[in-house]
Amino acid sequence: MGIAARLIDMAEAALFTEAEVAGVEGAGEDFVRVDLVAPAFRAAKWVAGTKVQIRPPGDGRGLRTYTPTSWDVAEGRTSLLAYLHGDGPASVWFRQVRVGDRVKLMGPRRSVEPPAAGEQVLFVGDATSVALARAFGTTGAALTCLFEAERPAALDGLQPGAEVCEPADLLDRLRTVGSGMAGPYRLVVTGNAATVHAVRREIRSWSAPPAKVTGKAYWAAGRTGLD
Image (cartoon, rainbow, N blue to C red; front, side):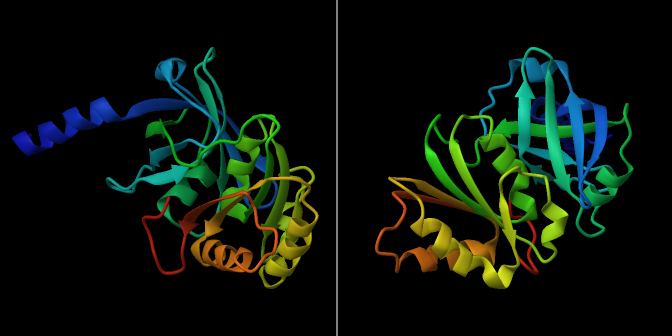
């Protein structure tokens, strides 16, 4: 092994945690929940909205980003809710994963600022945003969730109380839901980059806009590397 390869291995050992799959459970039509355990998780600094980046087997040195829905420091355990989309290495791994498998990951690291207990949040997203909404649900914030989906039924039951509509109807529904928000609130929009931009443009025309807006693009058509 050359010096460069040894240096890479040393860097990876410092940056990555190897976790074991402790549980696998299907969730809805296009999702799977995977529980991971590792001793290092007991020392992790996690808050809702942080991210981890996993290295799916067969993807070389590529990384894929996920939002843990919960983190149990005492047990050294975290849960990922993965949206199974396409045939990329991550989706293939999540479809085939079994208890006892192992995977390398980085994190947790800050990604989206978590809400405070009791804070009003209007949460807008898509299938890639469901895990973040679930994580926010652990904070005690008052969440109102609006999701877009080409097949709304695919998100049924994944986030209790959430409204799901088709993409063409999202902005109309957002206006209606936003006008019904009482008092100061924060708007959080994640998922499709095009939706994040459209929502930001939309609220500029509102007479009573949100007190704070947080946007995070997770993906964009024809692009990779977003998280």
